[in-house]
Each structure stands twice: as C-alpha cells, then as structure tokens.
Length: 71
Image 1: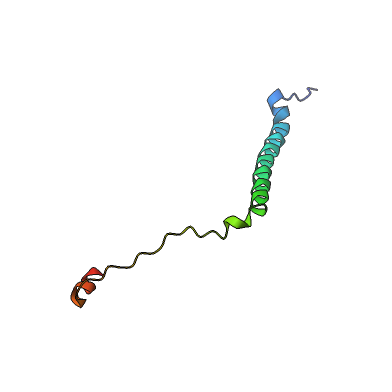
Image 2: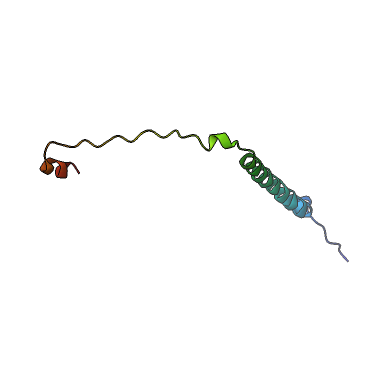
C-alpha cells in the first residue's frame, strides 16, 4: 500500500498562511493603537487656536443697478 506524500510547499501551506495573517493583523493593530494613542494624547491648546483669516467686506458700487450686476 502506497503512503501519501506531501510536497514541502503543500505541507507548509497552513503555517505560511497563518504567519501571513499574523503579520497583517500585527501591522493593523500597530496602526490602530498608534492612532488611538495620538488622538488621546493630543494637546488641547492646539484645538482652541483661531488661525482663520478675516473676511473682507464686499465692494459696493455707486448705484443700485451696478450692485445687482456685481452679485
């Protein structure tokens, strides 16, 4: 009776698959944990800074007909 033989790649397929899944999950967990860490440890002083530019007043022409055209 002939015994079943496995190729080296076929025998390592489950091990390589789970190693690949482990690496992908490790990278995602590092990304997620670092994003949570930086969001929780952000300084609150930078949130209140107002760096917007002032709004300029519109230029109004001499008569009402020209003002309507400018709008």
